[in-house]
Image (tube, rainbow, N blue to C red; front, side, top):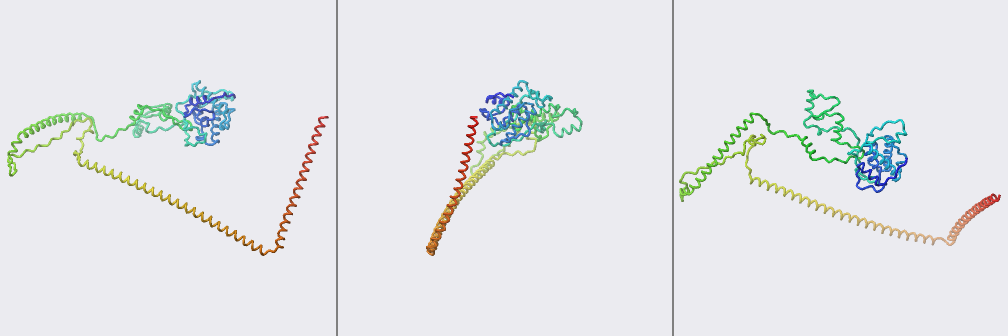
Length: 495
């Protein structure tokens, strides 16, 4: 099978077609790793390869991934992969990498031309040769595909392993259901027999959905991650959709006070409005009356001051009438919501004691200041303690190191003195032994040494003679053989 030569531009084009994110563009075919080929297969065929190594670190794991991809192309997709060796690809052989990239480019071009038919179940064909030569239709690439978590790990860099993810039907979470469709309501409806749904339909909230539509809804809501390298691409959800989903799932709080809409309640509200108008008119009348009385009191104040006696200080006139305090009138008794009406529930109305409030505020500030001060003092104490401990540890380490050096120095001096004493003792013993020996004994020792040396020299000379004889025999034999071969060659030449 002839494979065209591809370039780095073709590889980058294929990566863009498969929606594989790379921080840097591929500038060499040796940058194509086994993880890239696994992703290309998963993106093009929209499926996962079982038994794949999610984080290939060793050469065996990378070779296994490439072998799985080639087996999938050969066995499942009926594509000829002859001439592509997984071992050469792992060893970054550009020729084999170029062949595999060219094969993926051909698959992508055929998919774009055919419009993306389904390849999950290839057609059965009795003729194996025709099934290998002709490529079947391929599915269109998805918009949600597996994502490469990091750059290629071919250089041996370690990354966190990602769990293998396979396509399967996911259960519907309870938060995706209609808020009004609670477990109690569904049980009640099932018991009453209100729902009569055919077996090929399922109920989700208040809408009946067929099985095929239900699988599509699950894919749209939950999302589907194919591949063994995780899915990190997420669709940007509009704010309006988020608000709609949030509003649909909001559970209103329980009312604090029961409310009801009835004609009797409307009549009560009308009566309260009439009472409110009467109270407001009465309040205005009392306010005007207090204003008039205050003006009259200010006019007769000088006349009343003259009725007091200068010596006793007792009032001679009539006692001053105490003015009644102002009556508290609510702003409105009418309320659209009974919960907002503060006059209908029994709560005590107490006036704010600003002095007490200021005292509490100052007390809280003082407590906070004391807490901050204690925290700062504790931090300083801990810091000081840690500094002192570090200094003590450093001093102890220096003292131990100095003691160890002194001990080693003392041991060295002791060894040197001991060696000196041993050498002196040996010299003294040798001199004393020489004094006891006679000249005849010394001559006998020298003769024995000379005899031993002569025996050794004779032995070595005999060994050397034997060696020279053997070498001369080998040389003569070699010369004779060479002479004989030369004579034979000349004889054959002249004959």
